[in-house]
Length: 299
Image (cartoon, rainbow, N blue to C red; front, side):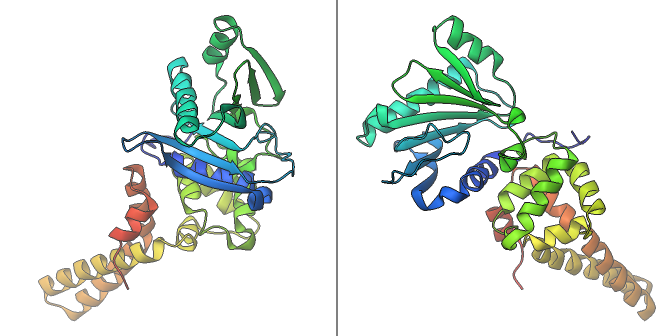
């Protein structure tokens, strides 16, 4: 993990939603994705609901093989984990969704996604509740004994070849995975659409991402990636404007036209250099992509 990076405020949940959509991209015609589904008028929300439309087509994706008509997904960021009580809450959400939306619980699944191996939770389910736990594929643990089909996903153990986007939901991204994710995001101009996912990944793995970008066959400077994602340009305008204003003020203070010109040039350079850093700082504070776009100045 990169040093001196506060990952507690990184917006992991929007990144998770985009990762799920990417993992199931080839089945998008038969699935409907609903993020932060509101259960009631009170602030009770499911992280994600995936509706399987009327279709006999099977889903061969490792974590989606158990999918039924309505599929509830609950996620914990790399700094968090699912306790026994968190599990009960997710299960209660699943039953509440069934009750409020007139679904049969046998037509539903619950998928719990976290980074680490859920040792204590699995131990409790096996020893205290007598549930059967089967690892059906690396990192996918199916829990038997409930009316709803239930599974727990350990992202860290998932194979990179099959779950590229889930593998990016970590603070310990290795260079192989980072390079594969950047390469895949480059295809078909995906990067702008994946802004939430890439911002979380970059913030949590700043050093690794910088090194991978520098070593790539087609080197892409880090600030160039920020520009490609769509926010750097707006923030660069603000940085340049602030830099120019400072430079002009300094030039006027010393009363020399040369000082003003130098100040303007220097201010512009500083503004361009630090614009993307402003975006990263604000992301660390918990600002979303939408909030940053609203805060950035217009043309």
